[in-house]
Image (spheres, rainbow, N blue to C red):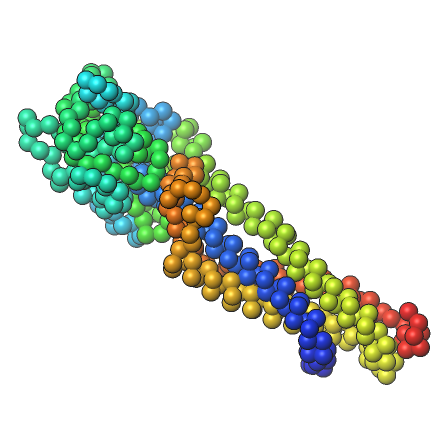
Length: 430
């Protein structure tokens, strides 16, 4: 208690120097809080852009399809399986899909595309694909009656390549599951821009029944995309889904080694390992930022405590001479360091948190870094406003690291002051 009173009194006596140190600590902590919120917002938007429209949080595939996607490597997604998945806690929606590569075009132009057969209502509930409509409409709830052309919604990149718009008729050719050549006439009813660059350049949507008919799958599908209520807990959700529906889980290596007809529930981290590894790299690099940013604060704390110890050597000598123990002297100077660090960290966490909260609600204008309204990174389109993400660790971690750094910086001045010889120090010697 005495050490604390002495330490606080000494800081008040040197307000200017103490204020500069507190400011250095506060700026460092505020910068870290703001930067962590920026990075998490960036990563969250990237994951959402890469998974929301195409991958969802969890997918079910046959092991053989994961190893080598082929149109004939399908499975039966019966009602019992789908109902079991829907009853899993955290599952919001699911969408069975048929995937096939084919040639789509007219007499003037053609392009290789990925045809994605979906149930319109289920896909709309599972992904925000309908929000990406730039013209036309989404697929009707049921396919049109024959002999009317089948409906198709094009990715914006496909529509530009083929130079077609709403109402255009296109012909598709593809290999069916039975080895025959599937073909069909389509009418373009919509054009979408999802924000996933690869998806918009290659994918077209059609009715699940139409896709099954063209590919001769007889009601089977290639995957089931599952949306959960928590993006970060996809691995845990995959385990729960597998247990409820009698499926399997495992690493990509285990999936490749499994029998071809085994069904696996796989989180987006396994489906998009490059995105997962990039996120891991970013988060591990936080400590490099701590090193660079907190180096400035560390120098400020070290300089303050060292100058304080040098200027008060006679005072320390007198205190030691009248009976203060070296350990008490050491504790007093460490208290000064802790108070400076705590005060600066509190101010910095508050200021940085408020600024990050503002950008979490109003967004951060990214157009200052680019000459376009939007830009893409790793195939994911970012809008001109980035919304930060605030998590408790963004406040706790910078504060704890700052206190640790400050304590390290205060060790040497406190140790030196506790070891001085009172007699020569009081007389003016060093």
